[in-house]
Length: 173
Image (cartoon, rainbow, N blue to C red; front, side):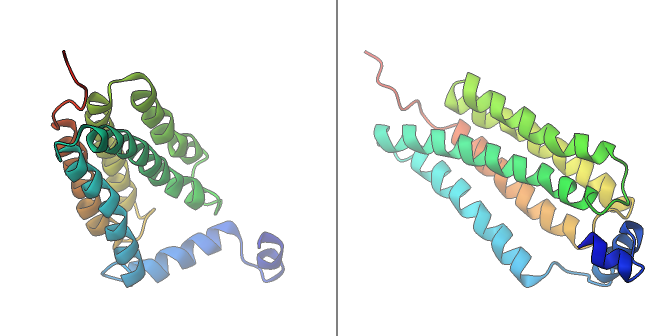
């Protein structure tokens, strides 16, 4: 906690330096981060597959779940910056950026057709990836983060795009 850190003479900047030193020495993502990240792709691909199942009920539910899950994950990606901004060695503007993905993500899910909503989430993932790439280049995120983000962003956006191409689950008559 901050009070204990201050008693030991560690400021927010010291914690930030320690964080960067610890993570810059790691070339690859921690195994647990990789496992959890890849596990986070499973719902995307299950939903995209179910959306193409040809069973109207499953398809409709899968599309809704995929959109909600995509919005939650996009919010999580922004929250990474909120957590890092708490260290105090970043500009307060990172708090603003940290909520932008969540503010973007809920709108398509609430206001658009489910298939269009999935497609509308893709730019949010790509813009967030771009911001993370720049933050990593500036030394604000550990070096191992972007190779993992490349893979996870590619997987999430492909699954969202695949889901958006599913046939309509609604009966037309």
